[in-house]
Picture 1 (tube, rainbow, N blue to C red):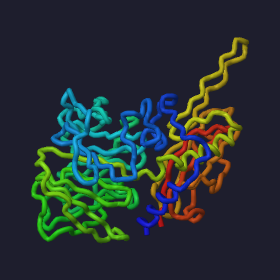
Picture 2: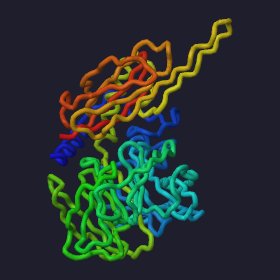
Picture 3: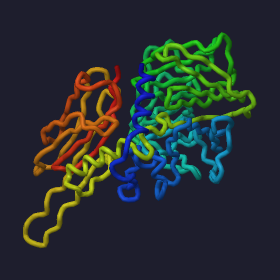
Length: 424
């Protein structure tokens, strides 16, 4: 059912008719954290020109031996032309960040470990990650909210890294009889889980882990161990199909059934090069909400109407600060406006979810939460208290299962827009 919903969601998004031209304001706001920015193929100028836009076909990227970028074109792996790594920066535990269209990973050889960002032309060292235990981390992928989850096969814990702030949270594994025992994993949004192939089990097993660190299930793929060298790179696409590259030079497709209770392992190629260090990343959304007539344009049009045609910042602003108005008279400057919208939790959710927000200005008068579907239709809006720390509860029974956008409006100004997913 969840796969059917995702397919319908992508088709519906592609059929939308835009009310306004594509908006790409990255050079103006520098937030780079929303799908209508660098992950959008229509926004590939300026600061987005080195990003990896989500496309309608599977976008699988692989870093070979730690410092060489390759791309799966649907039939073969090809070297990315023009991509260079002159400083030989190593990268592993990597994943695709849908909030800015770039690939991030960990330098396993640095101490402390550095966060690195992979672009279409090269690789950048973003500096050490505070609070992360130094190790050769090689298992990694992103959720849909800009968090990179990393671990190792021999671990009973993982770390969640918000790459925008380098905030690190340690999460213990639970429900496992031993350690994680996988060389890489991939995040599948439709199931809100990580999937990876175990390294030591015979038969070959696909393991599913929840984002809270709890073990979900093991699924047998083959009666024998098809990859004694380990699946060093695991990817997924918008349909939930999983791909796995064995370091011994074999490439496989793992196809789920409609309920994600059974999986079929199929060999795509057995003539790939052997790898000593291998990792992968992929955009898990396809281009259903990122090209041409995307839903975000519809929402932006509504937000502009709320503000009377004035300029509204794009969704994705993590913290909006309006500079005080300077006055040459004796009156004191106006108070700075600071409003913050948090990611709802839990996300995805089944019954209820909580949206936290902060409005740190005494002179703010009114605030609202707006909820849109992915067609840009306003589902409902409610006034919320103007408070330094507030909460707004959304009951799942008010909506059908699917993906939604929610926006915080303070005094007719759109502060932020984020995504949430309601499951069956």
